[in-house]
Length: 136
Image (cartoon, rainbow, N blue to C red):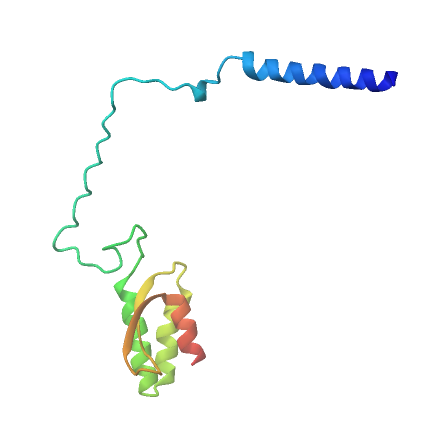
């Protein structure tokens, strides 16, 4: 019985101490509400439109800039033409020039969809496309 009284006294004392901390402590800085003049938030100005001559689809609507080089776009096109004409030695030489370069660039690749027959254009790494063409 005596132990129960001690325990209940300790629990009541702990509860009172906790209540005192919550009710008597000053408010935290993040909880204060300050009433004052209204703040008007202005919207930022709209970004400038790209110049009229800049119609590059790789950079027109994206924050990501694809690095392209016309020379490698031409190598991909030549290799596709050589493969279509069954001139495999010339196709391999054009693709090897791409693979020997240290840098990787992007090019537009045209493929015919097997289901619909429509021609689709996508951006691909020239090294990735060169490996695909060599594999075909």
